[in-house]
Image 1 (tube, rainbow, N blue to C red):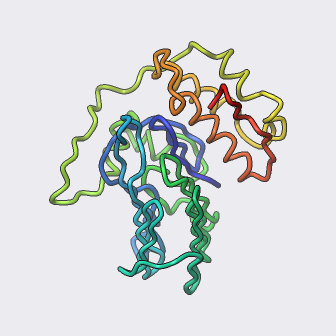
Image 2 (image 1 turned 45 degrees about the vertical axis):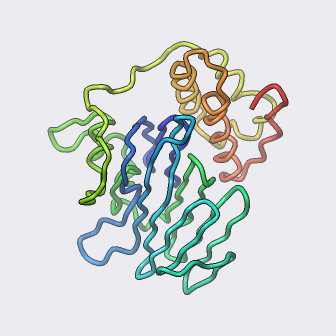
Length: 258
């Protein structure tokens, strides 16, 4: 199962909930949250780039007793800058111009496009043991993320709960009353983009409706701006997840589009 974040503040939990969360602090993306020995944690620092688009500035990954700090074009393991491919007990780190990938033997794969998009795939032995923006991985949507006992959270409250408190951090929590409006326009256009012949091999591998909804949210948020990040990030994510699921997306970018 895969948890991911991409583009205009989109998140998809292991259990398949999707939500938007615009916070720009350091967050627990996914961690082993058992009381006893915790096998791993993945923290992300979110920020806005010079174009005001969300990005991940760095990722802090702990695998058992090894600490890995990832930035674009930089890998630091236990305080030392290392060259990739880097291999250590139970872990392989690879980088190229586009991706940083970490494979951990305990059952974790992390893939980051060094910008806005991060996915973590976890072995199902961690079912019901995780916490963070990716949820509890119990196989049930909404439960224990957005509904916990008698309490229900909106996505902003839920996201704010995952913040890593650091004494010197200067970052504001997004306002919990400003949950992003849902958007019903642009369905035809989004459907057309995501069911184009390039994605024929993806249709049965992924939940198409989820990406159509994300695409519609993006189109509304772009307000008609022909901003390639705005329009393309969800399509890129669909293509990435399709490849990751074993599909073979065709070439969908054109000179006019993305």
